[in-house]
Image (cartoon, one colour):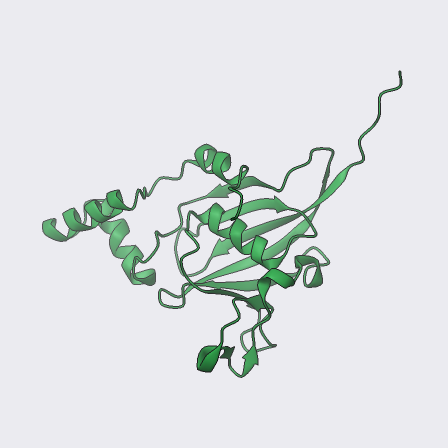
Length: 201
């Protein structure tokens, strides 16, 4: 009996890097081309170790160049940013913005801590394997949730290295332990969680 050959599948490859932090944390992963920006957001969250506990938005790379691409639509006086409504990320596909290698945008998360990531579409990947998403590579840890932005993150890193007043160092280390956050990236553990996403309710 002739063995049936499987048609190759195409995936989008993205590289996401966090601005304002050195050395810069980054992740490279694959997602389906028919994914929405909400799914891209979920992939970024999983790749960074964040917990989807704050608002987010995707914007053109040039600040104030164009209206927002996608994000969380809000009602009331805060429902628009700079006068432009935010399209619901659940209804906007990534292939509506990313079509050619080199296309990119900005991803903003937690408008209090003010995290900004560069999102670069690096190309198409063809494989016979079927999956929802896959982590390819990465380096450095991302900041934990609610650490106080770049300044708070730098203070946390210093505390983890034993730099600072003893009481402050001890307090920050205890907080990091409660958050189950480590300054050392375990890429294989992260890949295992990323490649097997939990089903959304």
